[in-house]
Each structure stands twice: as C-alpha cells, then as structure tokens.
Length: 467
Image (cartoon, rainbow, N blue to C red; front, top):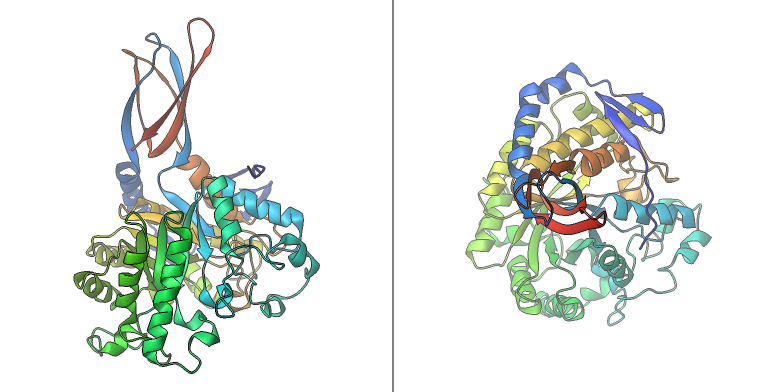
C-alpha cells in the first residue's frame, strides 16, 4: 500500500488556507451573482437529497451503547488521469503523486492512446519498458515538457503497471481510449484504404478486450468523433458527421467501433462516448443508441484552455471555453439535455487553470473548482468527475497552471479545496446510540466502519455500506 500523506487544510469563507498561508479570493460581484445564495441553496438541497441515504444496521450491543460511525470510502467516483506516473523526475515527487491517488481519488483514467501504445505494428506496450520507470525520468529531470515530448512514451506510460497500482489501492480504472484517429501511429494509415483501416480498428479493439477482459470496468470506445463542422442546422445527417473528414477513417467508424467493443468485452464492462459540449452532441449520441450502439455512459469534457478564459470566468463575464459556458445556469441546461439520453454522466476531463501563477490566481482557481465541484456532485446523473492535469506544465499543449500541484509538486489551494470537500465535507463521521440492537443514521453513500465497546470491555467492529 502506498504510504499515506496527509496535507491539512481548511476553508474559511472565500479564504483558502493552506499550511498557514492565506490567499484571498476576491470574487467579483458578477461572479458572486452567478453563484448567488439561491444557486448555492439549490446545490445544498440536491446534495442532501441525492448523495445521502438513511441506514439502519444491526449491532449486538445494549441500548444506549455509543457507536462510532466513520465513512471510509465514497460511492461517488472522484479521480484524475494518471499519465505522469513515475515520470516527474524525483522519487519524492513521484511518491507524493501516488499518495494523492490514495488520499484523494478513488478512480483514475489510464492512457491507451494507440500512437504511444503500439508505435510499431505488433509491438504493443502493455508492460513497463526501459522508459516506463522512475530511473529513466529522473535522469531527464530538467527537460522542458516540449523536449520530453520527443519520447513517444511521455505522458503515455505503459498501462499494465498503472492498472496494478489501481487494483492494489482500490482505485477504479477507466480506459482512455480505444480509437482516437488523431493519436494513431502512422503505420495504421500508410498505404491503406478505409476498408483495411477498419480491419485494423477491429483488431485493435479485440486485442484490448482479450488482454484486459473485465479488469477495466469502463472504456472510452471513441474520443471526439463528432466532426466540429456539424451543427443542428448543418450537415448533421450526412456521413461527414460520423467521422473526421480531414483524416482517413473507416466509414461509419463510431458506430462500428461500439459493435466491435461490445463483442470483444465481457457484458459487465461499460462503454462510454466522450466529447466536448455542442448542441449536436445529444442527437449524435441518441442516433447511435437508437441504431443499437451499446453506449452505457456519456462523457462530457469541461476544459478551460487559456488564461484569458480563466480570468473571464473568475470575473463572472460570459465565456464559452471549449464549447461550454461555465455559468451555473447554462451548465444546468446542458446537463438537463444530456439527461434526456437516459445514461449516467462522466465529467471526463476537467481543466480549471489559474489565470496567472500568483496567490490571487491560485485562490480564484480554487474557488472556481470548489463551486463547480459542488454543482457537479449535486447533479443526480453525474457519477464520476475526472480532473485532467494534476501537475502544472507537464504537457506543452496544455501548458497552463491547471494542476493541483505546481511543477515542483507543491500543493496549491485548489488541492486543499478539493481535499476539504471530498475528505471532510462529503464524508460522514459521527457517534450514535444503539437502540433495539440497531443504529440509525443518515450519511453520504459509501462504505463505513462501525466501532463500539462491548460490556466486557472488548471492541466491536462491523463494516457496512450505505446505498
């Protein structure tokens, strides 16, 4: 078991207090109006209604015996991608990175990008190679993210060691992604037509299914397969919407990939679709479902990919970031539309950067994250939230201060904000008295330990689950 590291924190009003350093979040009037008392009250009501449950459990003790009730895990899934595993350049940084997963997260997104996993046809990187270890990445410490990207393995560590880590620590893995044409190795398309490429897609999906079976409980089958030029008023019904016209892809490849994945994986494995928000997304997914595609989960990305957008959002200004408005009212309307698909929602890729590397920027990042996590946690159909980059500036194409940690692995206020929600506000810890051989309480859904003292002085213990 990875050594547990605890970083203490608290939140007081809009002040983020971390290790004795206060950073004031000066929320603008416009931002405060968006996240007003009524909005916050509705969030609280939904959390109480949808994330808690009443439980009554038998305990073999006399009436009046005090029973300590401690929640030890969440039913809800909180996580991040785990792409920087053993790649941070120092053993203590790698240890802290892993400890964050055991302290904060109970889920992780694992990288299965075809380009990095099978750079040469037939040479599939399931297990660790010479560059899938801390020693190699420690030796290149000091390289910029752009320099590191010359190594095809960078941020694409071999998946088997990551899966072993997740299984050892009770972390639910999510496979990302089976088919994503922009990140396929060149050999897949060189000198072939769409029909041959389709056979390679099918082989790839069946290889993953044969290797992992039920070990990975859910997969992104395709990623961002809706053509960006498609709109509700545009060529939605044309075949161009079901692929990427600027890339060689098999005809109707999105639908066909779900057919292959369904036949390649055990029945209990969930299949997800993943994309950013556009009005075309819901009818796109609905059409696939109506045609018989096994889509069990709808993934939606929430990325802020520029400091300017982050500043606008922190100021309460209207802002569409990666197709999505971050105003709470607009988010609720989007979630209502996604709910018409009748599928659980995975907030699959969350990027919330600081608008600048400063105490003020970090405090605003923490406040935006806290407000939005509360909204997302309250929404009944959302079951999983995945923060994207845990560490600042670890990928040159996403070179923003969007991590929970600085590039030298110092925890930022946003880490403490999420830790306070996940490990404190949203975990139940109380003492109740037994009556009639039972204890009753209301708590957040998840697993609990009950502990008490028997009349003879011995300790009693019971594990239960609140559903």
